[in-house]
Image 1: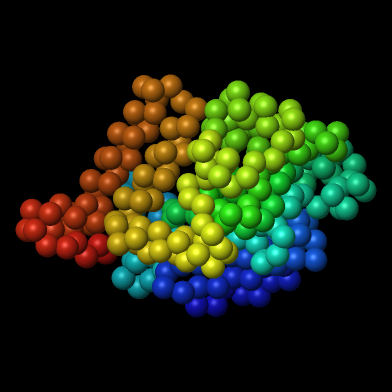
Image 2 (image 1 turned 120 degrees about the horizontal axis):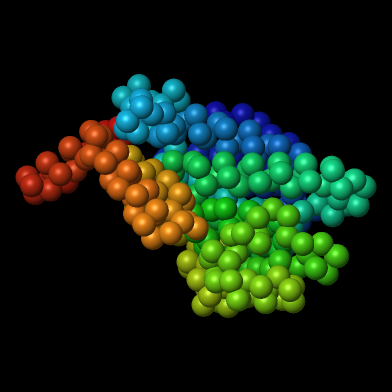
Length: 287
């Protein structure tokens, strides 16, 4: 499958897993405006190829414009990583930022906000594979993934106050959601870095692996495991979780009930329940 060519990204696809590698090792994979623009284009492409969100009024999935002829989704999960070296993503591109006006800086932040929201909106799981530094914008990019795997060499942090800045790519919003308000405040105010194991102990990281190779293999294995489940159910579950964040319990339950109803209208639900009763393995059509 051809995902196009990019100046700052490498996009590969195998066995339903799309791997997006930010490829600026000479700049520690920093998030330049070009990187952000290309990430946005890739997110648009993935959204079209795995469009679980084309709804016909009642919320039920009918396949998507980019789906296979049988309605299946070719992209079953996304791995987001950086080129091998010292960093996953060292942060925003500080060299570019030094010449920005306040208005240009806001536009820069908003462009990255759009990328992180697009990653959250994808109907398939996104796993950030962090090897090396995930600082500032790098940590914020990882936070937009469904979950994070890390190598032993990974380091996480929001060091913006060292530069007279504040998090601009979502750290002040998503970091408290992951590790709690008090701990997020401490990390942002102090600019302290976390090792992979410290991040794991706080719930920021789901798994720590000895090497980069084992890290990427584990993420691919997790996506392949998820790919055996109902694609529509995974997509509805992801959307339900994301939409319930920040709501009251009652409001969150309404979100969940709507997703539960939508799942009942899919062919995957019919296949899954019939397979369970018949004591056979389901073959989900993905619609």
